[in-house]
Image 1 (tube, rainbow, N blue to C red):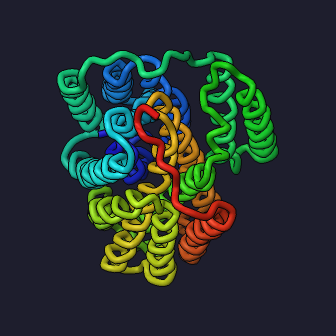
Image 2 (image 1 turned 45 degrees about the vertical axis):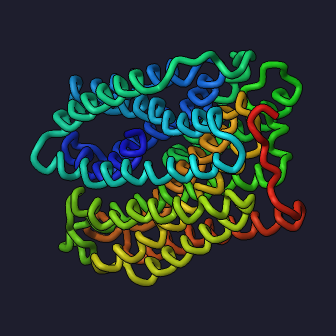
Length: 445
């Protein structure tokens, strides 16, 4: 359900823009609000599961998601939409809870199976998001759509309360409030600068610099803290830092891909290019992206179980590169999107399996939420980078009809192809520095 939100809202942005009479910059704030809320959620929610319990944290997350859907349903206005998107983004970070929960109850290499099953489960959510959102608003209003989301989140939360067992907190530590607030502050500054920096000019650049400096200072503080939000020393373990970096790059690929496909396919043919489809049509064209998650998750499981997640990262980035290269050359017809989406979906899901499994495999069960949060936070930053890059490109030049020049889409696919190749470079460098298989941390060790 949480993954459905991430893939449900982007194809609906043109519809929201039309219904509330928004410009491109204003509609982009809906995506920004979702990203900012997610950034804060990825910091706090997995860590709360460590110090509270999985069941309690699931209840809290379900509450944020339900309220986040109800606010725009009841308010039915642009401010309500922004508020609801922020809450949905925060609650949507609950997608990381299964990683920590399963890590606490499974041992050794079996964790790889759990991660793969989780990745495949997100495929079902992505299918629901891509198709369900467009199908719903085709016959109902946006308000009705959000009411249906609220009902679905309520039922999901009740089911989790009934199924997830009572348990004591795994960690006897606490979340350092100053460190958590500081982390959210610099992550928010970076995300905000990346998503809105173009419209803010020098102010956006200053905010980005402030966020980066704040992140460096925060990391130095966390190394000496007795109540660290994230154990930054974990990044020194083999492949952990490259895995987190890879999760950021795959997040950037996903965000850029979603926006490029959405805006090209929903551009009216009268503009001189585009497919003129609606949100449902866009979702159907991206359906192979979601379906290949099942294949990708199953394949990645075997390699990760053998302690070779670097191989997973390499294969995932290479397959994504093939799909992005294809779309750079062929994105003018519907069938071309079906082919490209399949490759990009397969590659990113394989890559995510490796990126999220590595931190889980090297930590003890009381740090499982922290490990998931580290990968999730970098993914959120990557998502913002991808959306910012595409927004910048598509705003660089417009036609007389007020839509981006067609060649900018080719440039966009080439740029995010570079993200895939960067994963290859970082992984190869890491393997040269740390030869041998990954040392798996067993439960209770």
